Structures are given as structure tokens and as C-alpha cells.
Length: 112
Image (tube, rainbow, N blue to C red):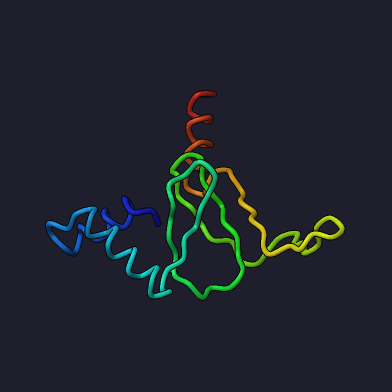
């Protein structure tokens, strides 16, 4: 989740919570190793619980939510000769189930 998403959820339980508190809490959880940063190109940083093992993400182009994908499709550990690979990133982009269904429904409405 990104800080704005954390604030929206936290506001339901803690009245008067502000974005500064969210950022301070995230910073502390990062320092403690409980959270890790998820950086997607062109997006604000998001955060998830650490210790999940190697995995990748799916980013919905409509609702902007990010979903975890289990495993690693096409995992490749070899770089060019002489290079040492220390990691890689893989992000799928498209429409989540809810957004895909809504897009399909609006297309069907337009056809009728």
C-alpha cells in the first residue's frame, strides 16, 4: 500500500490520524525491518510486510491497486558474461478482475 491508502484505512479506526503520523510509522517499521519498499516505475513508493520471499507484482491501470503475484515467471539469474546479477524486477500491467469486468460491462452497454 502507499501512504495515502494506509491513511484511508487507518482513518476508519483512528480518528484524527494525519499523513505525518503515517509516514513516521512507515519509517519506523522500515527501520525495524518489518516493512520493505515496493518501487514501481513512475509511482509513489508502496510498502509491504517483509519476509514474504521472492515475488512480483501486478499493477491495475484503472484502479491503481497493486497485487502480489506468487513466484517468479521466467526467472533468469544470468546476466551478460562477466556481470554479477544481484536481483531483478518484473511488473505486469493491465486490469484487475473488478476493473476488467467493469470495462467489459461498459463495452457491452455501448454496443446495445
